[in-house]
Image (cartoon, rainbow, N blue to C red; front, side):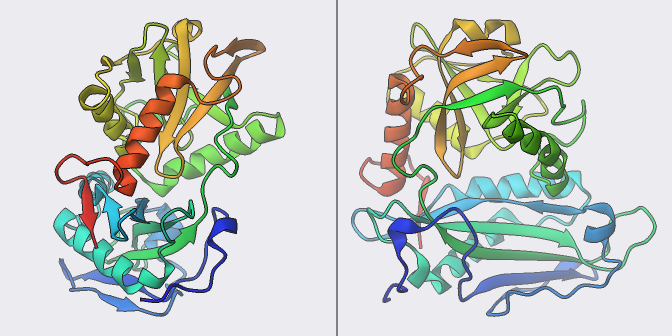
Length: 340
């Protein structure tokens, strides 16, 4: 299929209208088969549950063009499984992971002309989401739901290379104890908006959140899990029941163990340990890894010695290996790459 006439090299990370999106409706206890539509607009009653009680969840993944010209997605089954968990936690009907993957493949295939070419640095971002769609005025779950997927081509998260960012230890809490921090719900991200705007206004790139119970342990940032590299080369990542299980972070952990022979520790990480680490990175779908050069704790600056000017050496190996797997230049573990 002929590609759209888009300046792939100058795409930002924003919404671009594509031709098709997938829509499936849940009514009277079951999902319909779903269909592709060209209409990007959603018409809902003013009292729809999503507007009144924020009953909405979402996922994010990408489609790539590999070196040999194939269009693929990366571990979409894990996105489907995570969406099942999110739906269950918000008392929404589960959209089965297998149907989720098929819907992703169908939507990407229909928008094949928008999948950026290999080497452009751009990718096709895929946004599956679900929301309560019928009028609900009493505080309770909706009776009807809509599951949708749209796509948009996006540019590289870092133009001109990944430059280390500065983050702060936040005074705000990202999630409540025993709350919804472990699911990908819109309400969690709404909670972070005040904090991120405040951080930007004060000159920081992101917030690093502490555990809400004791405020002594590191958890994650507003939109990414955290990895650390110790001075002797181990990968350490925080463990907590209120952290979103990042697919990128889980993949980096496996890459570290199986490809790079790096020792991995998934454990509680204390704020008091920060100065003991050599490297730090924020990991997620958009950037894969964003290197952190400086962490500011209420005026105290903690500089990561291996990441002040560029991505640290161990983080760079992890980044290069995982992106190589995604782009088809390094052999992937079985099931990681799904061809469209």
